Image: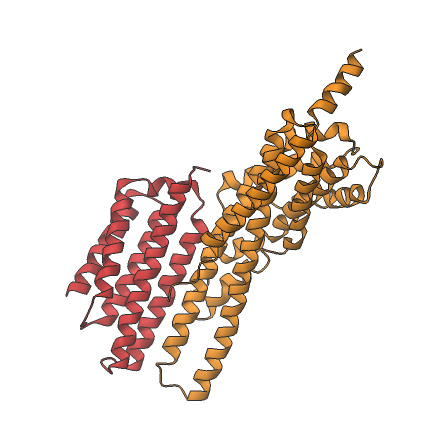
Length: 275
Length: 143
């Protein structure tokens, strides 16, 4: 009797599978951003040739591997969600993806002090919780509990990534401004015209690279925020789902949140540098 | 995280103001060079000062998530510093004539360095030093 009741309860409380699959799809998009922070250290060193080496640059470089692992944990967790929501067969391709990513998502090194220790501790705890959601058998019965157990962890990881993006984006913008001012200063100087032109072109290409990096950071922010919000929406609606109407409403909510996030990130992070 | 979006925004605003002051000082030096009021080597020194100030402002961004940095920006003293830095930016933007451009550019490096120290490793002495640097720069601007 108790087993039957548990089964009924699980079915009644199970979230809409379509909305979970949509959430999983948003998370899987994060796989494109594993290397998003790789160039932060290199960019930081750009001005070392003319100024004293910046003591903060090695910290940015030191965290690169950890950020890779964080991203793998997120994508692995998204794949696991998708696999658990896929009840058409016992195992799916996503099972393997999730397991493989989960196995390589462990944080190896301690974090530098580039970010506040509370932020990185939250990210580390979050990754550990997400990995525990990845391992195990992917059955629909596990889905609701996994989402419930993982939501805070996912939000903490998203906050950490957002914090890093915000600071690196500002740093990129600072470098782009410095380059523009350098170009205008070079053009005022008394070096030969060819030197001036060459320097201006070289610096412009670096500025273009930095601008592209800012666009990539903004895309990463859009993707992580959309995944975290969709997951939060599903978590909030866990107890009220199970029918087609609720499924449709939740999908609409997720789509609306994603559109709002895209608009918000575009206005806050991709503003052009001041002239 | 010691919190909160407002505190983070204050650190970012202060860093942005430091950048703006550095750029305003460079613009003064560029105008002087254009008008042949200063020699190339004087401009070079002003440009080096600008580069250093921008680097120190960038360090503020790298450190802006730190709880300590956010706590200190909540203090009234640092709000005063933010206001003073904003005033310096205005004064530099309106500067028509300048006798000692290097005094100003050096004053900017000193100010941004002191602000970065006050935010990253806060203490009352560091804060007083930053406020003192702002006063010195103001005197250099107003002559």
